[in-house]
Length: 390
Image 1 (tube, helix red, strand yellow):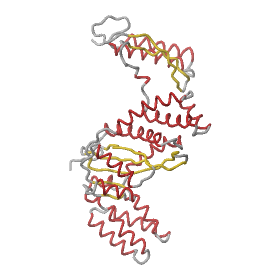
Image 2 (tube, helix red, strand yellow):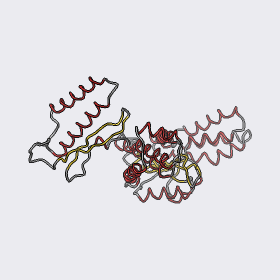
Image 3 (cartoon, rainbow, N blue to C red):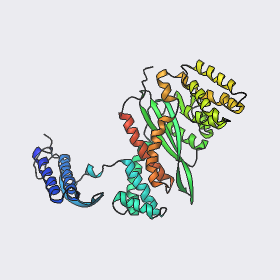
Image 4 (cartoon, rainbow, N blue to C red):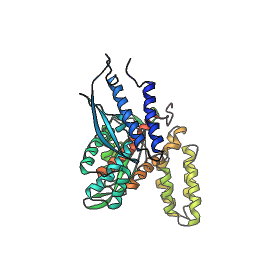
């Protein structure tokens, strides 16, 4: 039988922790945490080797090789740890490897600012508060290399076939060539043929120009993206040209939410805004395309004299938001806007708000990848987003 932590072993560890808590009080968690982490690492090494210390066992898979001291910065202080070593093995305690990737990426983004002199004393203070200790350029370089390899693997992984493709972008401030620029974070989300929602990729570019969107879409194709039957996106010149070049035969659904916001710019009088919004909602909520087109013609005619620019704009632009009527009724609500990407943007914004200014595009890409990679893992193992039985 493989070695495992016995009941009496767990009881011994717990007794040590409780003794330390009793002696130092709940306000001083440093020593209890040291005991718990050190004992957990020893137990994990024994489980890895298949035998307890000094135990003879035919199932033993290696030899212990002492301990190595290590200081671990935490919010209760620096823990004095004794990391178990294993002879002729790259095993390492999982307790020291754990941690949300996006938090690690945020730490690295802040650390880069601090090391490169881009930030001020305030950013240094944030690093100190989050890390619990100073960060050297050597530590940043080593951690960055390890994390970048992991994140690049996610960005380059093979993609599943997707029926729907949703595209959007947000902007973050990045230092580039001695100037501070607004860089675009391009994001792609798909709904697989099994009905699962997935984050397909992310890219950081200097703008939403066609060349950047085209390169991003081509990278998705190169990773195996196939089966796309509908693309949902906002109206942007660069994206429209790139979409037409890379996915020439795939229908486009213009985001109804943004279209309704755009319409307000063509309303000549304040008192008409509510009425126009109501007219557009009626078009979008119609039971079928024929009824939507009838309501649209009616609205175009009603505003021909009172708001001619609005009437002309509606005639040209609103039909681009009616493609969704070709989908099954159950899919229309979720596929008529890019609002499903709002959670992604909120999560990215929540992390980037602390950094405020990134030292380079790599730091921004690192953080965005970490955030989106975590969300993608949740979606991949979560519930079905859309039933694809149709």
